Image 1 (spheres, one colour):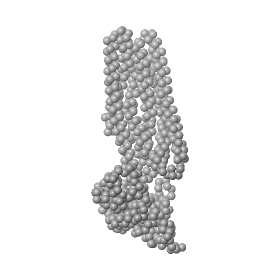
Image 2 (cartoon, rainbow, N blue to C red):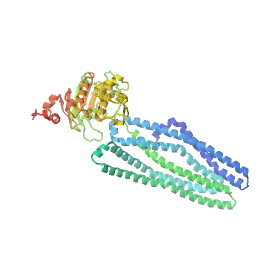
Image 3 (cartoon, rainbow, N blue to C red):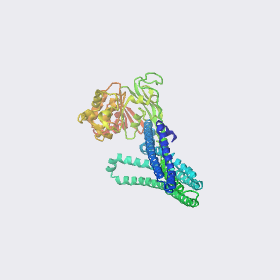
Image 4 (cartoon, helix red, strand yellow):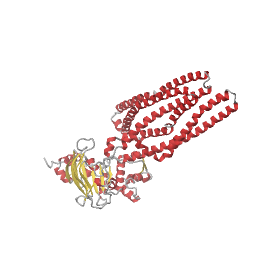
Amino acid sequence: MKSLLKYIKDYKKESVLAPLFKMLEASFELMVPLVMASIIDRGITDNDTPHIVKMGLILVLLAAVGLISAVTAQYFSAKAAVGFATKLRSALFSHIQGLSYTELDTVGTNTLITRMTSDVNQLQNGVNLTLRLLLRSPFIVFGAMIMAFTVDVKAALIFVVAIPLLSIVVFGIMIVSMPLYKKVQAALDKILGRTRENLAGARVIRAFCNEESEIAEFEQENELLLNTQVFVGKISAAMNPVTYIIVNIALVVLLWTGAIRVDNGIITQGAVVALVNYMSQILVELVKMANLIIQLTKALACAKRVESIFAITSSMNDGTLEKDDTSVINKENTDKNAAIVFDHVSLTYSGGGDESLTDINFTVQKGETIGIIGGTGSGKTSVVNLIPRFYDATRGRVMIDGFNVKDYEITSLREKIGIVPQKAVLFKGTIKENLLWGNENATAEDLEKALEISQAKEFVDTKEGRLDFPIAQGGKNLSGGQKQRLTIARAIVRNPQILILDDSASALDFATDAKLRQAVKGMKDDMSVIIVSQRASSIQYADKIIVMDDGKMAGIGTHDQLLAENKIYQEIYYSQFPKEKTEPAIS
């Protein structure tokens, strides 16, 4: 929790004023029993009406000042708590954005969402209640005990016994319940993950008529969360009745003792009423403190979970080389025209066991178009993910323009690259806003050119408002082909040195795919293009084709060379163009 307190440093004034005003309110509250005692002993007993009126006005004044103090304290505590949560959430989001794919894969999306929403909200509530009650409640409890001693020492000894008993109950329950709240949050993670999966894959679930089994699994996990919450709730719920029992027993003893001492003329009736009021104040404050302890227990559990995310550091260290740095420091002795070099590269995913890529070795010249083809799971996407450093090679080197990609600043490296991932992702906003993700300084002419090259212009022209046409979250109001063409346009707007198309034309028809490839080829001469595809037609006119099989390079060459010599390429090509199949070139 200590490491998170820095996010409240901009609210030091509010964090000090909130408890101070609460203490001021508490001070006025402690005066009320004495005023009541004075009304009974002097006003009622002596039939002194002016004194009753005077003390009544003092009570109204105390109530008014207390109310103003309470509202002011609430304002400052709410401002500090909300500000703290805002800064914490921003810092957490920024930290998550800095993590590499390896850490994101390990932690999981549903866990990160829970940390940023539910856990931070619990921390916000915890800070709010802490500023308002952490000092006020103990101050009232011990203040009431001290005031009771000023009324009658012997009767006040009952307070000395009751308060430690109450403290044992409150803190004992807190110690037991704290680890249980961690389990509740962990179960909530699972529920969120299940919900996210089901909502994202609703069409698949319905297509396979799997609704009932998914509902059954969800109910099972929901039942586990329910049982855990009920169990910890029962423990926490025991706090209020147990504290009430202790306080009410103390009240009975206090009334018995007070009655005897009044009967003996040692104390007045007003003093007994004051003592009972002080005991009632203690009861109310201990109930508040009990609820505060429950909330603090949840907040502390959530704080540890949030801290665990901050404790995760990216396995990918940022380099120092900037995009346009022309110095020769750290430059490798490679071909001056080489845009990309894979030097005996291997990759093992975190927790993956065996290598996903093994000894990948090839060079991409400036202006060259490279095709990568292979079966599902052969490692095509893993290869291209190493170029923008989504993952780091575990062995070997990946070089761009003669420099190891690890030497570049990650931002500078990715500015050189335009990448279109397998899954077309668009964000809520207009078409123009989505395209400007590629280059926020792009001109209207740049946008139009990108739309034309990506073959998106033909459908954008039909949309109302053209570039101002609103896109729903995830591009749900566009077809699969339209989304793919817009994501390609977004990458082209970047005007990159390296363009990676990772199976990004799978939803396009053959004619549109051919036009797209022809248009991309006509872009700037020194731009290197890497096309990952399952379609042989999409890569057959590339300068070189790399055939992947089980994480290894099974061949490299032109379409004609591979078709004549490579069995795997022959199998892929003839499965898609069976009419062209002739006698195999090799037996």
